[in-house]
Image (cartoon, rainbow, N blue to C red; front, top):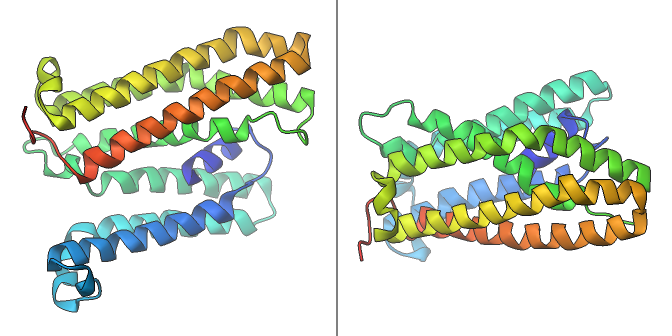
Length: 263
């Protein structure tokens, strides 16, 4: 959400950093909570969530990511309080790059042998995913958004999505290949099946996005009420599919991992 808000603001899809405070609060709480949950897992029981003996090990594996996320959050907070639009956008851009890099600082790509640069592929992948996931919220045809402004937002989003989304698929397929080991046997593991589910949902979203660009964008200009109704339906479908994507990622990165759970 934070990456989405920052990227939409930087690319002038939305005029203000609307929703940033809430997303930053969730980001800071989530990153902190993750450290303590990892500590409880390592100690073996939830009652040991603040165990100082095991926290050193947790910090060794997750501390860098936490610091990168906090650095990105600090830049976003600074962007939020500045008055100069140029400086706001500059800091917002640095913040979204930092937050995207935070996802590369921990996780399965870090344990990939002989592939030291693999985590770098996570940066554009999470950046574009954040940009895409924020669309159903930012482009929602709310009553306070005029027909003209709504049309400008959808057109401007499509302008960047046309080249950004294919890059998301390229990085995603490369990561799937490198992490799972074999694209043709992806379905043989739970991890692979979850990533295939994520890919299938993303392809459906891509189809809905194409409909938005080629049909709904024109409809918004020709008949705003019909365009708004069609956009509301398509964004509802996108939001549902994004929930499926996030669920697949959640399970793949917590319950299982690359090369595990063969059937």
